[in-house]
Amino acid sequence: MIRTVCMISLLSFVSPELPAAERTAGGGERQDAAREETKGGKSAAAKPVVYFTREITPGALVKIYEALGRPATGKVAVKLSTGEPGNNNYLNPNLIKDLVQKIDGTIVECNTAYGGGRASTEAHLKAAEEHGFTKIAPVDIMDADGEVALPVRGGRHLKEDFVGSHYPDYDFTVVLSHFKGHPMGGFGGAIKNISIGIASSGGKAWIHSAGRTKDAGKVWGDLPPQDDFLESMAEAAKAIADHCGDRILYISVANNLSVDCDCVAKPEDPKMGDIGILASLDPVALDRACVDMVRSSDDHGKIHLIERIDSRHGMHTLAHAEALGMGSQQYELVTLER
Image (cartoon, rainbow, N blue to C red; front, side):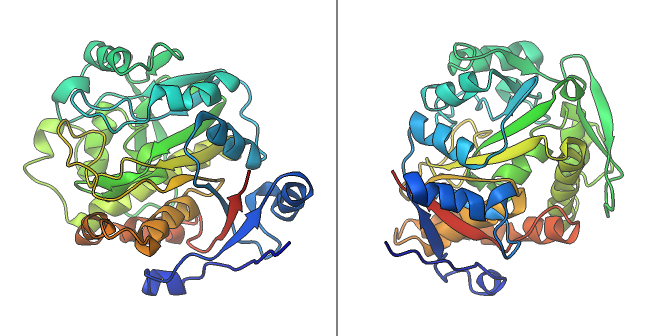
Protein backbone atom coordinates (compact mmCIF):
# COMPACT_ATOMS: atom_id res chain seq x y z
CA MET A 1 0.00 0.00 0.00
CA ILE A 2 1.29 3.47 -0.84
CA ARG A 3 0.27 6.35 1.33
CA THR A 4 1.38 9.88 0.77
CA VAL A 5 0.91 12.67 3.25
CA CYS A 6 1.31 16.32 2.27
CA MET A 7 0.17 19.53 3.85
CA ILE A 8 -1.51 22.34 1.99
CA SER A 9 0.40 25.48 2.98
CA LEU A 10 -0.24 29.15 2.54
CA LEU A 11 1.73 28.84 -0.69
CA SER A 12 -1.48 27.58 -2.26
CA PHE A 13 -3.10 30.91 -1.38
CA VAL A 14 -0.46 32.70 -3.44
CA SER A 15 -0.54 30.15 -6.25
CA PRO A 16 -4.06 28.69 -6.25
CA GLU A 17 -3.42 26.61 -9.37
CA LEU A 18 -1.16 24.28 -7.35
CA PRO A 19 -3.01 20.97 -6.98
CA ALA A 20 -4.14 20.07 -3.48
CA ALA A 21 -2.06 17.16 -2.22
CA GLU A 22 -3.87 14.47 -0.33
CA ARG A 23 -3.58 11.38 1.81
CA THR A 24 -5.76 8.40 0.94
CA ALA A 25 -7.57 6.43 3.60
CA GLY A 26 -9.36 3.21 2.71
CA GLY A 27 -11.46 0.76 4.66
CA GLY A 28 -10.46 -1.51 7.53
CA GLU A 29 -7.00 -0.95 9.03
CA ARG A 30 -6.19 1.96 6.72
CA GLN A 31 -9.28 3.89 7.76
CA ASP A 32 -8.70 3.12 11.45
CA ALA A 33 -5.14 4.40 11.14
CA ALA A 34 -6.31 7.56 9.40
CA ARG A 35 -8.81 8.24 12.16
CA GLU A 36 -6.18 7.68 14.86
CA GLU A 37 -3.74 10.04 13.16
CA THR A 38 -6.43 12.70 12.67
CA LYS A 39 -8.33 12.34 15.94
CA GLY A 40 -10.22 15.52 16.76
CA GLY A 41 -10.06 16.72 13.16
CA LYS A 42 -6.34 17.56 13.31
CA SER A 43 -3.27 15.68 12.13
CA ALA A 44 -0.12 15.08 14.12
CA ALA A 45 1.23 18.34 12.70
CA ALA A 46 -1.85 20.18 14.06
CA LYS A 47 -3.29 20.96 10.63
CA PRO A 48 -7.07 20.72 10.40
CA VAL A 49 -8.18 17.73 8.39
CA VAL A 50 -10.57 17.99 5.46
CA TYR A 51 -12.11 14.69 4.39
CA PHE A 52 -13.03 14.19 0.75
CA THR A 53 -14.94 11.69 -1.34
CA ARG A 54 -15.68 11.94 -5.04
CA GLU A 55 -18.84 9.92 -4.55
CA ILE A 56 -21.98 12.03 -4.15
CA THR A 57 -24.49 9.55 -2.73
CA PRO A 58 -26.55 9.24 0.46
CA GLY A 59 -24.15 6.58 1.72
CA ALA A 60 -21.10 8.72 1.04
CA LEU A 61 -22.66 11.62 2.92
CA VAL A 62 -23.20 9.42 5.99
CA LYS A 63 -19.68 7.99 5.68
CA ILE A 64 -17.98 11.38 5.59
CA TYR A 65 -20.05 12.54 8.58
CA GLU A 66 -18.88 9.50 10.53
CA ALA A 67 -15.27 10.12 9.52
CA LEU A 68 -15.33 13.43 11.41
CA GLY A 69 -15.65 11.53 14.68
CA ARG A 70 -17.96 14.11 16.28
CA PRO A 71 -21.46 12.65 16.79
CA ALA A 72 -24.35 15.09 16.53
CA THR A 73 -26.27 14.70 19.78
CA GLY A 74 -29.22 16.30 21.52
CA LYS A 75 -31.53 18.53 19.53
CA VAL A 76 -29.77 18.81 16.18
CA ALA A 77 -30.12 21.71 13.74
CA VAL A 78 -29.24 20.91 10.13
CA LYS A 79 -28.49 24.22 8.46
CA LEU A 80 -28.95 24.15 4.69
CA SER A 81 -30.48 26.29 1.98
CA THR A 82 -34.02 25.36 1.04
CA GLY A 83 -33.49 27.13 -2.30
CA GLU A 84 -35.30 30.07 -3.83
CA PRO A 85 -38.42 29.09 -5.84
CA GLY A 86 -37.28 28.63 -9.44
CA ASN A 87 -33.81 27.41 -8.42
CA ASN A 88 -33.10 23.69 -8.76
CA ASN A 89 -29.45 23.57 -7.64
CA TYR A 90 -30.11 23.20 -3.89
CA LEU A 91 -29.16 19.95 -2.18
CA ASN A 92 -31.54 17.19 -3.21
CA PRO A 93 -33.62 15.93 -0.27
CA ASN A 94 -33.10 12.35 -1.48
CA LEU A 95 -29.33 12.88 -1.19
CA ILE A 96 -29.41 14.18 2.37
CA LYS A 97 -32.35 12.20 3.77
CA ASP A 98 -30.33 9.31 5.27
CA LEU A 99 -27.95 11.62 7.11
CA VAL A 100 -30.64 14.00 8.37
CA GLN A 101 -32.75 11.13 9.69
CA LYS A 102 -29.73 9.30 11.15
CA ILE A 103 -29.03 12.27 13.42
CA ASP A 104 -32.74 13.01 13.98
CA GLY A 105 -32.13 16.51 12.65
CA THR A 106 -34.42 19.47 12.13
CA ILE A 107 -33.80 21.47 8.96
CA VAL A 108 -33.35 25.11 9.95
CA GLU A 109 -33.47 28.33 7.95
CA CYS A 110 -34.19 32.04 8.39
CA ASN A 111 -36.17 34.36 6.15
CA THR A 112 -34.48 36.41 3.45
CA ALA A 113 -33.85 40.16 3.42
CA TYR A 114 -34.18 40.70 -0.32
CA GLY A 115 -37.80 39.82 -0.99
CA GLY A 116 -38.41 36.85 -3.26
CA GLY A 117 -40.18 33.62 -2.42
CA ARG A 118 -38.75 33.10 1.08
CA ALA A 119 -39.12 36.55 2.66
CA SER A 120 -41.95 35.49 4.99
CA THR A 121 -42.30 32.41 7.16
CA GLU A 122 -45.41 31.23 5.32
CA ALA A 123 -43.77 31.58 1.90
CA HIS A 124 -40.54 30.03 3.14
CA LEU A 125 -42.29 26.95 4.49
CA LYS A 126 -44.15 26.63 1.21
CA ALA A 127 -40.87 26.70 -0.72
CA ALA A 128 -39.39 24.11 1.64
CA GLU A 129 -42.41 21.87 1.07
CA GLU A 130 -42.34 22.28 -2.70
CA HIS A 131 -38.64 21.44 -2.77
CA GLY A 132 -39.22 18.24 -0.79
CA PHE A 133 -37.58 19.10 2.53
CA THR A 134 -40.68 18.79 4.73
CA LYS A 135 -41.04 15.18 3.55
CA ILE A 136 -37.73 14.12 5.12
CA ALA A 137 -37.60 16.13 8.37
CA PRO A 138 -39.22 18.93 10.37
CA VAL A 139 -38.41 22.41 9.04
CA ASP A 140 -37.96 25.34 11.42
CA ILE A 141 -37.88 28.92 10.14
CA MET A 142 -35.92 30.17 13.14
CA ASP A 143 -36.80 33.87 12.96
CA ALA A 144 -40.55 33.26 12.71
CA ASP A 145 -40.81 34.62 16.27
CA GLY A 146 -38.09 37.24 16.10
CA GLU A 147 -34.35 37.31 16.70
CA VAL A 148 -31.70 37.19 19.41
CA ALA A 149 -28.20 38.65 19.49
CA LEU A 150 -24.97 36.70 19.79
CA PRO A 151 -21.72 38.51 20.64
CA VAL A 152 -19.03 38.97 17.99
CA ARG A 153 -15.59 38.80 19.58
CA GLY A 154 -12.85 40.79 17.88
CA GLY A 155 -15.00 42.06 15.03
CA ARG A 156 -13.99 45.08 12.99
CA HIS A 157 -17.54 45.90 11.85
CA LEU A 158 -19.93 43.85 13.98
CA LYS A 159 -20.25 43.63 17.74
CA GLU A 160 -23.38 41.51 17.56
CA ASP A 161 -24.80 38.91 15.19
CA PHE A 162 -28.60 38.74 15.02
CA VAL A 163 -29.93 35.21 14.55
CA GLY A 164 -33.31 33.53 14.53
CA SER A 165 -34.75 33.39 18.07
CA HIS A 166 -35.17 29.60 17.86
CA TYR A 167 -31.48 28.95 17.22
CA PRO A 168 -30.32 28.82 20.88
CA ASP A 169 -32.84 26.01 21.45
CA TYR A 170 -30.59 23.61 19.52
CA ASP A 171 -27.82 21.59 21.14
CA PHE A 172 -25.77 20.82 18.02
CA THR A 173 -25.46 22.25 14.51
CA VAL A 174 -24.67 20.27 11.37
CA VAL A 175 -23.74 22.76 8.67
CA LEU A 176 -24.75 21.07 5.42
CA SER A 177 -23.71 23.43 2.64
CA HIS A 178 -24.03 23.39 -1.11
CA PHE A 179 -20.70 24.79 -2.30
CA LYS A 180 -21.13 26.99 -5.41
CA GLY A 181 -20.67 30.56 -6.57
CA HIS A 182 -22.37 33.62 -5.14
CA PRO A 183 -23.30 36.93 -6.79
CA MET A 184 -21.97 39.05 -3.91
CA GLY A 185 -19.59 36.87 -1.88
CA GLY A 186 -17.90 35.16 -4.83
CA PHE A 187 -18.66 31.73 -3.43
CA GLY A 188 -21.01 30.22 -0.90
CA GLY A 189 -19.81 27.52 1.47
CA ALA A 190 -19.68 26.82 5.19
CA ILE A 191 -18.90 30.36 6.34
CA LYS A 192 -21.64 31.94 4.26
CA ASN A 193 -24.09 29.26 5.41
CA ILE A 194 -23.61 29.99 9.13
CA SER A 195 -23.30 33.75 8.78
CA ILE A 196 -26.00 34.96 6.41
CA GLY A 197 -27.82 31.64 6.61
CA ILE A 198 -28.39 31.59 10.38
CA ALA A 199 -28.92 35.35 10.58
CA SER A 200 -32.48 36.58 10.94
CA SER A 201 -33.95 38.65 8.13
CA GLY A 202 -32.79 41.79 9.93
CA GLY A 203 -29.50 40.10 10.73
CA LYS A 204 -28.92 39.47 7.03
CA ALA A 205 -29.34 43.20 6.38
CA TRP A 206 -26.96 43.86 9.30
CA ILE A 207 -24.25 41.73 7.68
CA HIS A 208 -24.77 43.07 4.17
CA SER A 209 -24.55 46.64 5.48
CA ALA A 210 -21.46 45.86 7.59
CA GLY A 211 -23.32 46.75 10.77
CA ARG A 212 -25.05 49.94 9.68
CA THR A 213 -28.71 48.87 9.57
CA LYS A 214 -31.12 45.99 10.04
CA ASP A 215 -33.63 47.60 7.69
CA ALA A 216 -33.45 45.68 4.41
CA GLY A 217 -35.02 48.60 2.59
CA LYS A 218 -32.00 50.74 3.40
CA VAL A 219 -29.30 48.22 2.45
CA TRP A 220 -29.37 47.54 -1.25
CA GLY A 221 -29.08 51.11 -2.51
CA ASP A 222 -26.19 51.95 -0.19
CA LEU A 223 -23.90 48.93 0.08
CA PRO A 224 -20.60 49.22 1.98
CA PRO A 225 -17.19 48.57 0.42
CA GLN A 226 -16.92 44.94 -0.72
CA ASP A 227 -14.26 43.93 1.78
CA ASP A 228 -16.34 45.35 4.64
CA PHE A 229 -19.20 43.04 3.62
CA LEU A 230 -16.89 40.03 3.30
CA GLU A 231 -15.34 40.74 6.70
CA SER A 232 -18.80 41.09 8.23
CA MET A 233 -19.71 37.64 6.92
CA ALA A 234 -16.64 36.20 8.61
CA GLU A 235 -17.42 38.04 11.85
CA ALA A 236 -21.02 36.79 11.95
CA ALA A 237 -19.78 33.26 11.26
CA LYS A 238 -17.35 33.50 14.17
CA ALA A 239 -20.24 34.41 16.47
CA ILE A 240 -21.90 31.12 15.51
CA ALA A 241 -18.70 29.10 15.88
CA ASP A 242 -18.03 30.63 19.30
CA HIS A 243 -21.62 29.97 20.39
CA CYS A 244 -21.40 26.31 19.39
CA GLY A 245 -17.87 25.47 20.51
CA ASP A 246 -17.37 21.77 19.74
CA ARG A 247 -21.10 21.26 19.09
CA ILE A 248 -20.84 21.94 15.36
CA LEU A 249 -19.45 20.28 12.24
CA TYR A 250 -19.27 21.20 8.57
CA ILE A 251 -20.07 19.24 5.40
CA SER A 252 -20.06 20.75 1.90
CA VAL A 253 -21.38 19.13 -1.28
CA ALA A 254 -19.58 20.53 -4.33
CA ASN A 255 -22.06 19.79 -7.11
CA ASN A 256 -24.28 21.82 -9.46
CA LEU A 257 -21.43 24.34 -9.52
CA SER A 258 -23.23 27.38 -10.82
CA VAL A 259 -21.66 30.80 -10.38
CA ASP A 260 -24.94 31.74 -8.69
CA CYS A 261 -26.19 30.92 -5.22
CA ASP A 262 -29.26 28.84 -4.36
CA CYS A 263 -30.85 32.17 -3.37
CA VAL A 264 -31.03 33.17 -7.06
CA ALA A 265 -34.38 32.31 -8.65
CA LYS A 266 -32.91 31.88 -12.13
CA PRO A 267 -29.27 30.82 -11.69
CA GLU A 268 -26.79 30.44 -14.50
CA ASP A 269 -26.33 26.80 -15.52
CA PRO A 270 -23.20 25.12 -14.14
CA LYS A 271 -20.26 25.19 -16.55
CA MET A 272 -18.13 22.57 -14.79
CA GLY A 273 -18.75 19.07 -13.49
CA ASP A 274 -19.36 17.97 -9.92
CA ILE A 275 -16.38 17.55 -7.56
CA GLY A 276 -17.58 15.55 -4.56
CA ILE A 277 -18.29 15.88 -0.84
CA LEU A 278 -15.89 17.50 1.64
CA ALA A 279 -16.14 17.76 5.43
CA SER A 280 -14.17 19.20 8.34
CA LEU A 281 -14.38 20.48 11.88
CA ASP A 282 -12.74 23.69 10.61
CA PRO A 283 -14.96 25.85 8.35
CA VAL A 284 -12.06 27.95 7.05
CA ALA A 285 -10.11 24.87 5.99
CA LEU A 286 -13.24 23.38 4.43
CA ASP A 287 -14.06 26.44 2.34
CA ARG A 288 -10.42 26.76 1.30
CA ALA A 289 -10.27 23.11 0.26
CA CYS A 290 -13.41 23.50 -1.87
CA VAL A 291 -11.96 26.52 -3.66
CA ASP A 292 -8.60 24.75 -4.12
CA MET A 293 -10.37 21.81 -5.73
CA VAL A 294 -12.10 24.11 -8.17
CA ARG A 295 -8.83 25.80 -9.07
CA SER A 296 -6.90 22.54 -9.49
CA SER A 297 -9.64 20.83 -11.52
CA ASP A 298 -8.92 19.72 -15.09
CA ASP A 299 -12.39 20.91 -16.10
CA HIS A 300 -12.04 23.93 -18.38
CA GLY A 301 -15.46 25.13 -17.25
CA LYS A 302 -13.90 26.09 -13.92
CA ILE A 303 -12.86 29.45 -15.40
CA HIS A 304 -16.38 30.81 -14.89
CA LEU A 305 -16.53 29.93 -11.20
CA ILE A 306 -12.97 31.13 -10.61
CA GLU A 307 -13.80 34.44 -12.26
CA ARG A 308 -16.82 34.83 -9.99
CA ILE A 309 -14.77 34.08 -6.86
CA ASP A 310 -11.89 36.38 -7.76
CA SER A 311 -13.95 39.26 -9.19
CA ARG A 312 -15.75 39.50 -5.83
CA HIS A 313 -12.48 39.17 -3.87
CA GLY A 314 -14.03 36.10 -2.30
CA MET A 315 -10.86 34.75 -0.70
CA HIS A 316 -10.74 37.79 1.57
CA THR A 317 -13.55 36.23 3.63
CA LEU A 318 -11.26 33.34 4.52
CA ALA A 319 -8.31 35.63 5.23
CA HIS A 320 -10.40 37.65 7.70
CA ALA A 321 -11.90 34.53 9.30
CA GLU A 322 -8.41 33.15 9.78
CA ALA A 323 -7.22 36.45 11.29
CA LEU A 324 -10.15 36.28 13.74
CA GLY A 325 -8.93 32.85 14.88
CA MET A 326 -11.87 30.99 13.41
CA GLY A 327 -9.78 28.43 11.54
CA SER A 328 -6.87 27.82 9.21
CA GLN A 329 -6.30 27.93 5.47
CA GLN A 330 -3.60 25.29 5.94
CA TYR A 331 -5.04 21.80 5.99
CA GLU A 332 -4.50 18.14 5.26
CA LEU A 333 -6.77 16.54 2.69
CA VAL A 334 -7.77 12.93 3.41
CA THR A 335 -9.54 11.03 0.65
CA LEU A 336 -11.97 8.32 1.73
CA GLU A 337 -11.91 5.21 -0.45
CA ARG A 338 -14.51 2.53 -0.61
